[in-house]
Image (cartoon, rainbow, N blue to C red; front, side, top):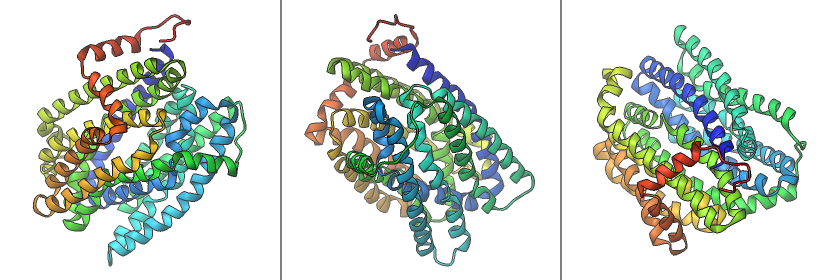
Length: 437
């Protein structure tokens, strides 16, 4: 693999590792300070915002890296158009989110206000689309450094909130503050490194929407079976149970930045390989699958074995109910990463039209399982529902839908441990400049 890709991934992982450690510590302190019920309100608001993100992005984030790689002559126009359209859609999503929170939680003024404050994050999720430019150019070190600096600034702010015993509303806006400062930073760096000015084109907006629209429904379906559990727990059980589940999801997702860094760094390299040959494309995709599968298996085993000390030493006795939930939740994250890799294959082979069906099946399964399991088992039921639906969506459905089976063949072939060893060696081996591999 290109040494440049390895360096790109290393920058992302190194900075995200520091952010993850700091963020995890602050999450622990915040959860302890707010308590299970109030922390559950924050978890609920975060779930609603996450639910809106696919609608706000309109599929642009899914196709932007490929757009920049394949059409570098119009990258400024593509980025400017994407950010502008996503900004407008974010405003519409904020109105819809607050309206939903108001109707779904009658008489709960605190919950509605927390959701309203947290939803401001959507505006800066829109401008965060600029991160795709850094990915495509394998310049993620700039994005990572900016994110790290901002994370420390916001961490300082959150420590101030904890030290002064501020209310939940203050904590609700910290996510928006984080994204806002990152957005400012990446725009400044882009201004210095860019080769083209940002511009807006309605015709290009239409073209990108037509290419990315399949990802809107698809991403919504993904969000349904990753966030519906929290929303349904709040509605069918209570905020405390939502808080317990939220902690389990947070701990299980501690290492998500590693997988995101690897996938983001591989993505442009895989698309470049497709330009050379289909065989090289498959080889590189298989390397990525192998990395994701074996790293996620190691994570699952570690957290299953050490769930008890992890929770008791961090969140404390009041979150003891999270231990069993964590042992289930950590395994559904494994299968969710497979879906992220599969989407690279789908985009490269122009099979986006099947995304809505893939994720509709998964979302439907998740909702049905949640309805059956949450009333009786609470957060445990939600965890099992998510695990089963993730496996069904990212593995089983690939065999049910015939045009997607070639991807499953690549995924299965990557299970050979030799593939992981080869991928690891390629990742950190500096190759001759003339090498295509």
